[in-house]
Each structure stands twice: as structure tokens, then as C-alpha cells.
Length: 349
Image (cartoon, rainbow, N blue to C red; front, side, top):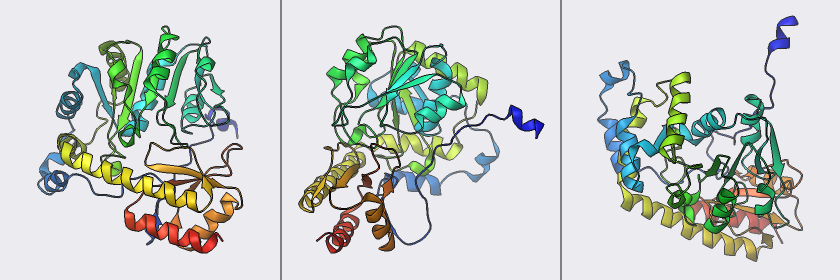
């Protein structure tokens, strides 16, 4: 039909499966523990009448809380509906040249989707045989750079020295570090944002702060970078954040003790899972995230995926050529991890 000629056609991002069935759900890297206790209390006390009003466009309380926690100015903080919304805004705001944006070939699979939606040219840079970034691949001309650290789905953490090296080689481009998993290991690149005006760091409340359902993401960078992001936000949708998120977001980030307790438990379980998986013959990059990217030389990944599903355990499999032999296994509670290992021991002889 003639009207279809004007439709923007893209291959969409495929999210991890969500289900209401009673299963062990370790396929979407969600936190296995509840949010900070104050979040529940605040939601119970939320003024129902306030929901008839638009939320505060500037999200001041949330922005100020994030700025205070990370030792930044409020003018250096941008918030959005999860880090996906924040990164989508960055593509609109920063990546507008005819030069390609650069990101790894094995990485968060939303990057090329956003680039296609917004008609942004891009080039994927091949990771090495150990799934590590080759810094020299990012020394060439480009229209911007983005990659996660730790990477997804591999879980590999790259050093701040390597990140700074890439930023130094790209003074004319915006470099974005997607730190959705940084709270589970490694050092954040936030320390570099005051030194480099073109560096933006993006984080989320969805993983380490157990608030995936609230959709809170944020970016920290130079005041100039944040101003440009806000200009795009106010040109698209002034009221991006909902009222409940604005109420509980500051409470979640202020409870540092609970945050450290939760991430500590996840890290401990992850390290136990590494030992158990290794004993079963799995190999994997050394994860510094809340998941493990594992493969087994004697068992097909799809076969293991099907077997685990039959045992009511959900993990994630990707179809890409370089990753088709791997399963991404989220770190759950100790009980969930033990159930996973028991199921695998029955399968792997």
C-alpha cells in the first residue's frame, strides 16, 4: 500500500522474557532482592491526589540526590526513564554528523537499533578473541563512541586507563560509557568526567538499586553536555519521569548501607557460581557484573537453554555468530543459584 512507503522500518530490540509463571527467573539481570526499605514505606504513604498533577519536569529532588551522592553539581546530572531513555536521548543530542558512531560488535544490542531508528551511521568494532576492546580501533575519525563497562553480555570490565586513552584520542567526539553494571565490580569512569568535557557516564537504578520497575536512569558529565541533553528532553517530552519514581528515587540512593549490602551479596553469590560452573566444565570471561556469560564445549547452548526451561529456570541466549554458544546467566539469590547448579549437575555428566 502507498502509505507504507513512508514508514520507518527497523529491526527492533528484543527484550528478555518476562513471565508471571512460577520459575527461577535469571534471564534479565534484575536484582534478586527488594529495593531499600524506605522505598516501600514511601510508596505506601504516596499522596494519591498528587497523581492528577504533572510531575516536576526538572526532577530537582532526584537530580540533587544523585549529584550529592556522587559529589557532582546538579547541573552535571541528567535523569530519564531508565538508562535506555537516557542513552536514546544521547543519540539524538550528540550523534549528528555524517561520520559513523563506533561501538563493539558484541555489546548491548540496543545501540544499533537506536542508530537505525535515528538514521545515524555506525560501525561495529570487533572485540578480540577474548572479547576485549581493542583501543586502537577507536582512534579513527568517528561521529561518537559508546560502549558498556562492564560490557554486556560478556561481563568484562575494562580499566580506567584504557577508557581515558580512548577519550584522549577523541577530543572532537562525545564518548559515552554505559555503566549499567559498574556497581558489581571495577571503578567508575565518573572520576574522569570533570577532566574531559566530552565524556558522559550513564548509570541506572534498575540493577544494583533493585528498581527496574521504576525506570530511573541518569547521566553525569560536563555542564555543557547535560545542557544539550536537557534541550533535547524539553523538545521531546518535558515530563519524562513519573511522580512515584521522583518520590522513591532519592530515598533509594540515600540508603547507602542497604545498597552496599545488596551488591555485596550479589558479588558473593557470583563468585560462588563461577567456581561451581567451572567445576562443571563451563568456561566464561571473568565477570564483573551481575551475570555470567558461559559456554560448555560438550553441550550446545540451545540444548541447555531448553533443558533449563523445562526445569523452570530461565536464562538468556543470543543468536549472534560470536555468542551463539553462550548462555547469559543472571546472578540470583543463593537459593536460586543452588537450584541452577543442581539442575545442571543432573544434565552434565
